[in-house]
Image 1 (cartoon, rainbow, N blue to C red):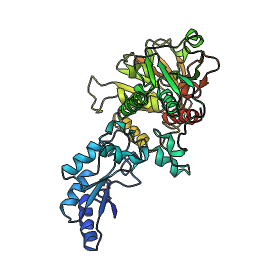
Image 2 (image 1 turned 90 degrees about the vertical axis):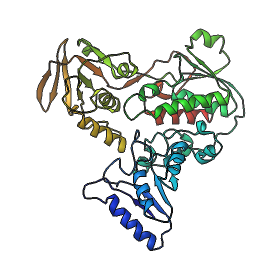
Image 3 (image 1 turned 45 degrees about the vertical axis):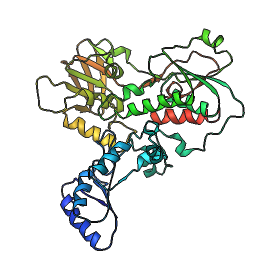
Image 4 (image 1 turned 120 degrees about the horizontal axis):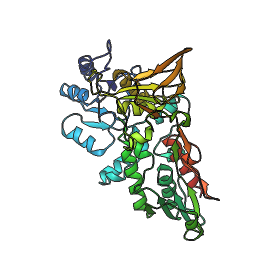
Length: 419
């Protein structure tokens, strides 16, 4: 039987309640207790958000196990074999139940058994596998596009393939093309692969995206893809070195800026901040309440809203009536709660109408407001596809249509498996 060992909610079932219930279940003949936690009302409790500490319900399984004579398991964010091994070795549980990571990589247990842990496709806990189902969509995975697709088959005609761009779309396209038997070269102008995914891993709770970059990079090496970093492809190279190659361009996207507002004393993009290129002051206004704007606010705001003099004062201005529209699930819920706890000012249904060197004017509810003490204006108003200067190239990922990580990987996979 599966139970919530603790509902973590006022008025809900407590750990002490569930120790008692578990004793009764054992006496009634149940021979295995599967200890989960939380409930479906308190978002982020039963399905933990990305960035949640591993095995958040293990304290409950450990305590319940002490009072029973039958096996007890724990579940949730056990996404690496060493975590499962430690939980069992330390008496936290008898068995580890692993859900989302097995969807992300169905060979999770086999690879762990063989000691090939670096080859396990990393589950980032985004929850798109489950949130989609709730709206009647087929089951899917951000990192594993093959969940919804046929197996990759060898190509009838082997080609030379050049992939321009080493972000997630480029790495996925290069790997799948190689699996089909093509001779693949990937060129990335930066010194490292990963693209914007490296910046996306910087905000709080997003560090697991680093595992995706590491996994996809390692996979290219193991597959025999030629990877050239610090290499910006030019039209001259296409006409000479890569003249007989099939070309795939995945050059990504660039952050948008509002030129009329760059007259403010200090402006920068969210990407500038996350990359370390921009250094905001103490009174920061972020224009845009989408995922990037909210994650950047979370990154800049103090961990505790204790009115300490060194704390940053962060304001988010969003035109719509909601934050992170288009997003859902526990990640959105937990991020919103953190922003509120940290004292970030969230101005919804607000439109900036004027910016000069020292002031930011916005309208909310038909009333004009002026912010005259800000020192930094941050643009988080979306991205625009990077220009593609190569004729006859197949264009994939954000440089074709700006989307999320799942969109980029899925588009690259779908194209490359038929190349």
